[in-house]
Structures are given as C-alpha cells and as structure tokens.
Image (cartoon, rainbow, N blue to C red):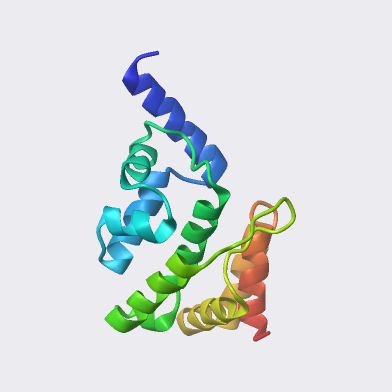
Length: 159
C-alpha cells in the first residue's frame, strides 16, 4: 500500500478508536501547555519519534495503554481553571503530576484522573454555562456520549 494510503487508513482508524486524529489531540496539548512535542512525549512516557509517527498517521495507535491514560489525564487538566488561565506554575504542576503518575490500567480500570480533577472540570463547566444549558446539553449527548452527558448533568445539578 502506498504511504499516503496507509496514512489515510491510520487516521481513519484513529478517528474510530480515539474520536479524532491523534495529531489533533496532541497539537491541542502542545498549544495548551506551551511545550514542545518532545517534552510532551517525555511527560506521556513515549519516545518523541513514536509520538511523531502517531501524530502524522504513520502509526495508527498508541500501543501502551498507560501512555493513553496519561494523555487523557493531561487533556482533563486543561480544564483546571489556573491551567486554562495559562498560569505557568499550574501548567508545570499539571505536567509533572501526569509525568510522575503510574496509572494501573486493566480491562475494568482505566484511570483518567483523580476526583480533584473531576471537581475542577465541574467547576469550569459551571463557570461557562447555566445549569439549564448544561442539562439541555446532557440530554442532547445522552445517546451517543453517555459519560459526557453524565458529567454535564452533574455540573448542572451542582453535585
């Protein structure tokens, strides 16, 4: 198969497996934390060349579930108000927390952050939307994205 067809296929698989191309997700993290791709690779626990291959679509997946767990943890930390505000100390603390994490990943256990992270996300959602709007968004997402709908519902109910 030609290189560009392999890349197209891999990006299509990434959309199916991860919801969007991994290159988009990684670029968002690089921009949000104002870091290099190489430093992000270190934080995630993956080699810089491997991260580059996943981003470009030359590889379809992140083979190590711990690396994926760290990426999800870091994506959630973007919602911490101090990180979202661009405070360097908060961004560095978030990066160090993820880098130093040792998530255990199994069939029934896929960590995406601690309870404190949930509270930060709920707080951030409450700051940007009214309770009724969060509830309405939850209703719209319920069928296709039940976990996200639940998060919105919890934010709207103040729980």
